[in-house]
Amino acid sequence: MENAAIFENLKFSKNWNNKLYGNYFTTIRINSDKYKIGRKFNVFVSNSEIVPFKVVCVQKLVFLFNDIPQLLMNLDTGLERAAAIEVFKSFYGDKFDIYQYCVCVFKRL
Image 1 (cartoon, one colour):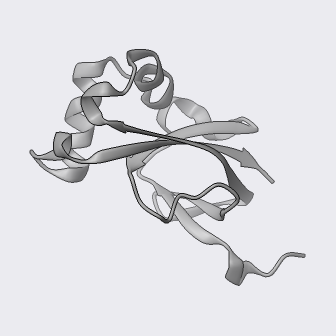
Image 2: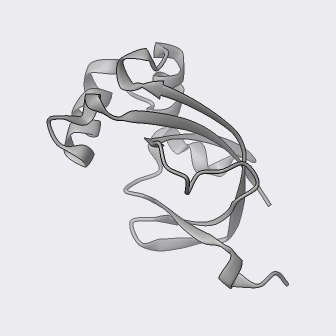
């Protein structure tokens, strides 16, 4: 069994678009060094761990919010762009669109 100490936490407020049931999923986050290819995470939804659910970042793209393709926004959130914007405002405040975002692809371990 792998040492749990090497895994960081990846938290979701809900299972957007039911994406966490697959072997691969995306997430759109404010860009950070935390999200590096090869880094491993424990996945939590509303503070409950999905067991056993450990993932590794396998791809990362960086965008300004307004440059995130509509297709990616729809698939990641399960929402139309206007509704997704409201979600991002609720997470990051009214200035949500000034940040660089990364779109990461995670693979279930």
